[in-house]
Length: 241
Length: 200
Image 1 (cartoon, rainbow over the protein chains, first blue to last red):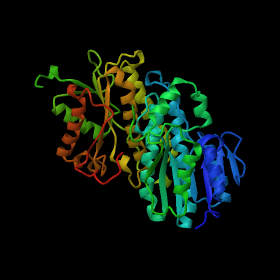
Image 2: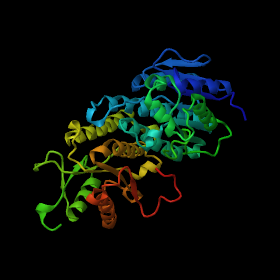
Image 3: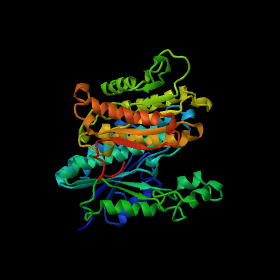
Image 4: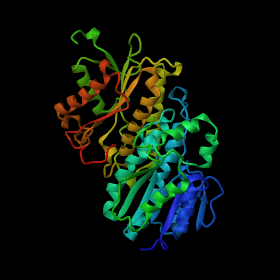
């Protein structure tokens, strides 16, 4: 089976894991479409929409333009953000942004691609969640939205299975992205502590997350649905030390 | 607990649904004094139960995103506000026990995208708050009502009293002063339906 005729939409493609996912899927022969608020998509995309994905109306319009031109049968709901704050310091901004970006955008994208997937009699949706579904202090709103996305992954898997559409989740652990490096300088004590807590004793690479996404999107992954695959060097299994 | 004045107060948050009212009655029968935010009381309760937003049922393609965003955002913001009002803002929480009600839809449920999102969000909150509030001595745990509470959810007359009381008893377990070392945990009151399923 080949991936060369499949069209995949990826959200949040300008940097980090999303950018690497695009690059991997291009290597695999997919026609890749992207959406991001930043106007710096990776090379090789067949189409790109610059849009604020927290804006539901603008997102729907952009999706309409993409689905009007392409039959999208693969979707990667990658875009997401996080706020680090203690509950005592909350202002409501985290809730406002993260419910829209981490959840509403995923729903809008899934709704937009469903007709083409149903028409094709098959499809794949991969939602990017997080280890935070197991709890994360100072990021409770982020954890709530990612846990919500995990639960929706399971509901969508049940709901769409009869249409031949699989829905799975990939949960990255600590990954070596620009954002991670900016927030965690290599010489910071926190980074050593974080790395030591990982059974594999190293930070993961974006390409390792992309590999999991590519596996779940692949035409041969026909019987896997409702699952969550953590790419975390074993951190989800246990904390060491 | 026989004397009314000795009944421990339990603050019920987001408790407007028939489901929440049934739980409140069961807790009252068990000797607790359920209260809503703002009800007159001397001092802050040390016990609280947070109920989920009752999102409308809809298949994925029919989810009204604006309603979903508004409802979930309000639930999350309101929960944070109520916790801050309990003293967290000053770093001295009056609360010692918080039980978060999730929903069976956290396991996945056809045609219930929004409700499953809410149920999942409650688990994410409970586990994260458990970590964040542990240094304050506040335990946070979650209870998942079984699927008996999903069907005809808004008609409380269809819920067996034994089920309601069993659910309330799980809540009481987490509220108990002797449960001070239990935090970040999830109990499903489901009559044994979770084995052979993916853990939430």
